[in-house]
Length: 117
Image (tube, rainbow, N blue to C red):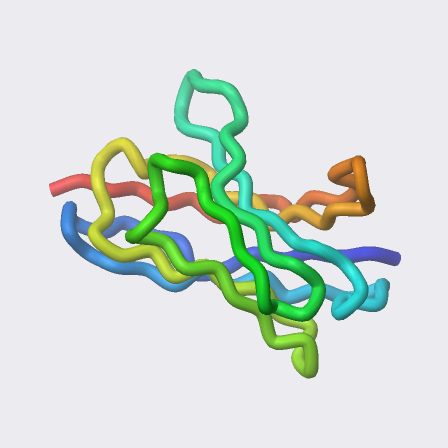
């Protein structure tokens, strides 16, 4: 069965960095676009970034462009999100999401990122 397991979240001070990871299994990882989506407390889901199957094309929400970097290792079936210059408004649960165009068909359980001094 398809599994997506995020890790790497935590409490960090403003300006800090984190690297989120998503371990995947149960599908041919290298064949699918992958996404990061987040949900801040009391707010709607917000798409953050996606990456094509080969890892050569990436897209970012305006709110994170220049601070976040999505990447993948198809040999290890891993998805990553490097988050720099964290701001309090980045506080959210971050989800790793598989895209089976045009649907987001599998979600991880999420990892909490809290930015606070």
